[in-house]
Length: 68
Image: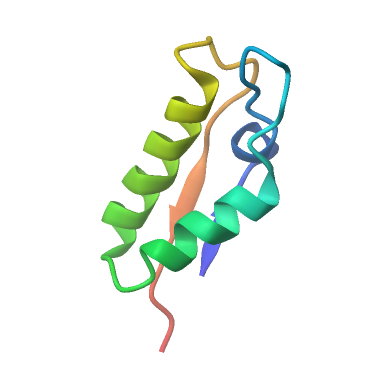
């Protein structure tokens, strides 16, 4: 289970293109076997790479947990 605030999905690059939910889903899929903290780190890294160093306009909050 992954929960995130709109600061993750709405993080924009220099062209004002948002990171978006599709990229979040792809990143989760690529790291679905990772530990929750590693998955969060991967998502934040992908958001930061997308934003290319732009200062976040909103908080970047994300929580992941394995649910059995």
